[in-house]
Image: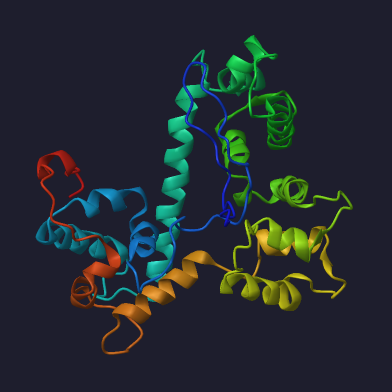
Length: 312
């Protein structure tokens, strides 16, 4: 049975006495989309990478309106107004879309946790909103280990809280929710990952633990081909010193690789898919001719007026 490897910190959108998410709060280098990147099936990954949260809006638009809005976006990407979109301009745009996604995520959750509207979030506020039901009745039967989850959240909150006052401003709360984007949070990211995967508690992640975090066989289930590929990845790239296990540095390089830029990789991919004359840059026509790569094109019965933003 396959268990997806969580690629980001998962935090529930809470209200009143809501409970923490069931899933582990695993952090990995934040991808541009949590969808599968397989152009043979669809371009959903590219849509989210290019448009951010607006991808769902575009997916609901008629094709002509989708292309019209895409043309407006192309003009915004072409910051030097030379009539072309370069790889660098694409990369800058994609990074901007990702930052906006993070900003919007923090803003949305901020309203849930800043209970007294004083512009900061204390640990007590976060704890009471997230774990209120558990704190009211710690003995209640539950499938979750809330005490462990709360202790883990508190530890991360304290690391994000740079001045140690147990009160998070907007920047500190962003670091708490998205530690993968903050250099000073990297140690806690590695610590959490190793706690999740290092089942024998020896301070390392061996091959069995590495594979077991992604795939566990049930009732004689045959191991899929991608598992063999992951074994090879472990041997050739993860375990750099060839001692059969990953230490903290190797784990850090796995979950937060310093030599891989998601935005750059996606910009290269979009350029490759759309550059019909292979001149290394895109015209508006080239992008519009490949609008299915950049945006959705479904015809739906959604009212166009309900989806229109002022910017379009």
